[in-house]
Image (tube, rainbow over all chains, first blue to last red; front, side, top):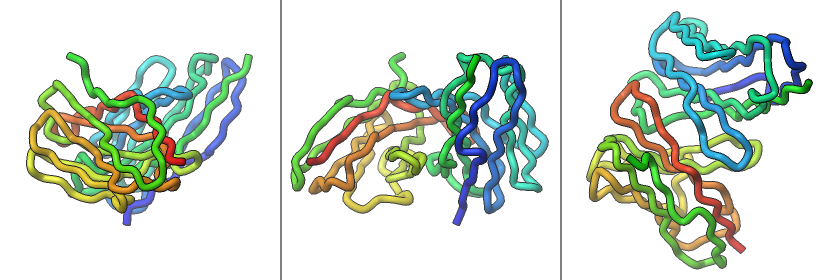
Length: 113
Length: 112
């Protein structure tokens, strides 16, 4: 059974600092997704990572995937208040269907001035 | 192009009532899914479909029913609502394996 663990679950950062959110998963996978959710809102797609060593960057966020270590990271550079949100990683098991995403519990990020 | 549309946005049900949450997408996506989101639990898969006429169960299917008679629509039926089904429900869709998965705005359901 595929399990996905994120840490930390809560993260309070100061503006301008860097930090990393970790996403570990328990069985082989070749597809990993990162989402952002603001309170009371839907999930916004951030990154789709499809292969070992994949790295994608958008603004102050950079995501990477190491399928051998079963680990993805979401790195935040020089945080700003607008990045405050909950971030989820989600994984599809190797050979599994795109319709069957397994989510981590989410990391609630708060960026303070 | 409206994306993924869910209705209703808010609903209050009495225990034992039945209802259907509607989900429609206009992007010709093959894959559609229903998730529920509860505090501290993340999102959990209820049912999913890989194309018209094909559905499968997810992690928490009990008490829910789905069908996929067209590519566009994937309704979720609550057969006999229970307070444990109070949650936020999200519908998602994607074109094919490895593509971006898009989520609807959510449906807030309270069962009293």
